[in-house]
Length: 140
Image (cartoon, rainbow, N blue to C red):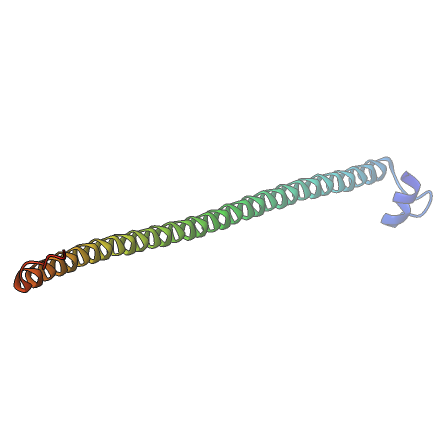
């Protein structure tokens, strides 16, 4: 460890003192600390990025669910409007049928009254004709 560190710094073998060795060790420790700090910062950054990604995914899922719920509401509203329109159409058809039945009954009643009037007039006319003709001759 120290030999390779000495060579990196530029001390040839045999030309360094104890202070130089302490300095080399200190530089080595500093580099080690820097690497550890960098690694921790990287891990922290990765965790934050994962949290953000997870939050974005949750947000996207929530938005998708909301859109799905809105689509379901719209579909339900459309079905309800369709059902209401069908009910209105049925009510209208029933009313038209009831009006037609009522008109037919009224027409039948008017026809019955008219036929009874005609019948009464025919009976009246026949009675008047018989009265003008005089008494019926007797056949012996």
